Image 1 (cartoon, rainbow, N blue to C red):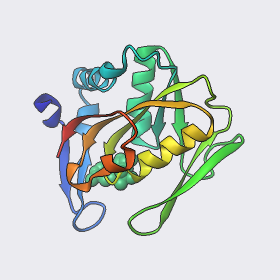
Image 2: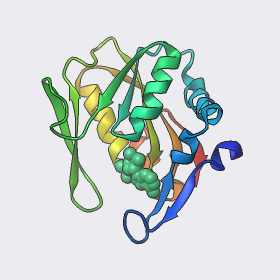
Image 3: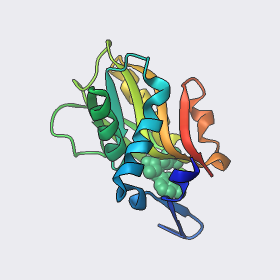
Amino acid sequence: MEELDAYIRNIPDFPEPGIQFKDITPLLKEPKILELSIEELIYPFLNEKLTAIAGMEARGFIFGSLAAQKLGISFVPLRKPNKLPYNVESLSYDLEYGSATLEIHVDALGKNDRVLLIDDLIATGGTAAASCRLIEKLGAEIIGCAFLVELDFLNGRKKLSKYNIHSLIHY
Ligand code: AMP
């Protein structure tokens, strides 16, 4: 995965002091590297009979859509509040400071769906854990969660201990 690591740019103190922001835009500029990252994200789940990929706004949309396209299955967006036009299921969760909400269309998934959740990065795991709960509210099954980057020191994995977690690059 050293090959991918070279395309993740570290931006110190963004968006606030003390945060090391992992910028994936250099990777998006390189089609072959982007393709490699998509293949690496999905390979542990190729025999899992997935029916859908779910991705979180906004960078999860990029990797999630490409993965869904590659597998020939549905892509389902998880969005910030008041963006989805149809009826939604919604879930609020705690952040380190304050809270956030994610929404999904009520008919996006159902009890026959086997879902892989994809995002660019897992930090504290709050976003991914809330996404899994939201998907399960619709009756679908989470088969796994895949991330390009995992910030190991934040222990986000602990919040997802009942799921199969797959990350390509660890910091
Ligand atoms: P968390 O809920 O703490 O796991 O945060 C994960 C979400 O926040 C993901 O959608 C990431 O894109 C974003 N995020 C959190 N920390 C960073 C970081 N250091 N660099 C880039 N994105 C981040």
